[in-house]
Amino acid sequence: MKAKKWLLMTLGITMAVLVAMTAVMVYIDPYFHYHGPVEGRPYMLYGSGAYEKYYNDGIGKHFKYDAMITGSSVTENFMASQVENLWQCRTVKTCFAGGTLREVDEHVKRSLAANAGVSMIIRGIDEDKLLNDKDAMPSDPPEYLYDNNLFNDVNYIFNKDTWLIPLRYNLQYMRENHASTSFDNYSSWSVKATFSKKRTLSQYERPQKQEEAAYTQEIHDSIQANIDQNIVATVRDNPDVAFYYFLPPSSICQWDEWNQKGVLKIQIEAERMMIESLLAYSNVRIYGFSDRFDMITDLDNYMDKEHFSDEINDKIIDWIHQDAGRLTKDNYIQYINAISQFYTSYDYEEIFNG
Image 1 (cartoon, rainbow, N blue to C red):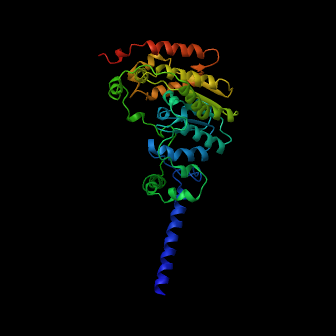
Image 2: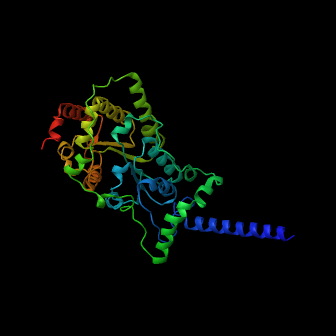
Image 3: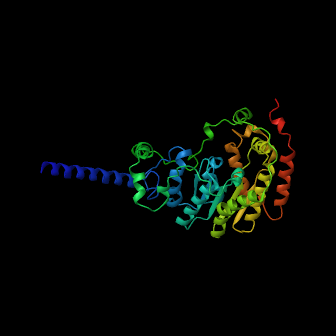
């Protein structure tokens, strides 16, 4: 009898603890899986990089906003307040460090499905990812946060790492009455970065020169499938949303890498295919900045081959707002010809001289 009583008491205490833990996690909800911000209660968006894929889905589904900035790590230093001031809208920023085209696009789709009032998406399309497989995804995404399956929420509610880091910091923010993390600061890393030619070259491992790769039908079909699935489909399926897609200005070191690997012409062809595929839709504007040659060849604007300074992030938003660098049916061939001529004839050896 004592054993039975002890067992029932143990089960009761265990259930009480589990219920209490569930209540705390659902109430604080550091990853916004169940609800958006609670009025009057500050929240913290902890860190960046690996944590973004935990926060972003909840932000996209449960925050109140009109516009979203999204893309890979080169979009992390954008200022949501700049977009809000220029377009007079509420803006969130949900970036994915190392994010694939499919990862970012699926996030946009989930966000639009949950928020009928979203009117604008600003998204960076990394040129190098156009050559990836259309189904490329990062390892170990937290799928339990993306679906509506309550049973697998145990991976969230009873996750040790969630209790020790984001939940603990949120409780600290509440106790000390801090201001919530802004979308200017969320995921931004520019204050910790050094932008210089010396730094950029120190991060660049130049590959051995290879012969120019053959542009096969298989490569063409793979690129087109990636564009259709992860870029065009969302534009086509959301005609009431204004999409602002831009090609980020990678440094001359990135172009040197493509040239060394023999894929430079394929890379430019992929850009052309993407632009042509999108021009058929009136609700998308495409911007190309690969012809900002003075900026791209000045390695003091970069910290490595891809990542540019926050000053360039600010300029990109201004350019988009001013419609500068927009690619249309009338000018995109001129743009493609200009970057093709420049990057196929550039003296890449001069990067390393001196």
